[in-house]
Image (cartoon, rainbow, N blue to C red; front, side):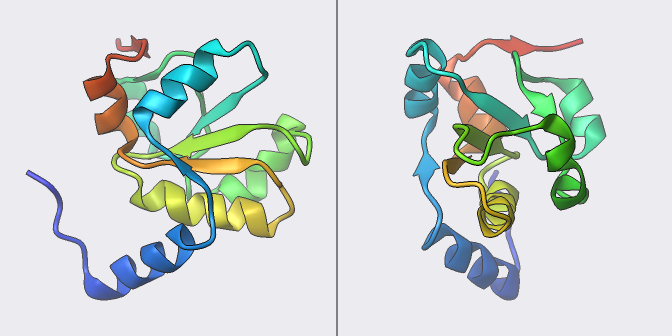
Length: 125
């Protein structure tokens, strides 16, 4: 069952979604196999990441993303996809990263649930 989000949170997410690029799990599958460099960042909480994540994804939680993304030495034009559980938190995170100057950042609409439904390669303990 889908989560019921509060109206103000949804308004903030919708405002971010209006100005950031988004991709879906099928498009992510293509990006993972097109031979071009791609950094995938899981912005969920640490316990969510440790319970399972997209193979090759790195973890930088949404709460520390702005503080820690520069530690990854990500080029300003690097192709980056952020994901969370469903695409709400990652939309906000993508907007923040975009505001910090990264030019090629997308949010995965559908998030972790979409990754699983698409059958993308995952790591699980």
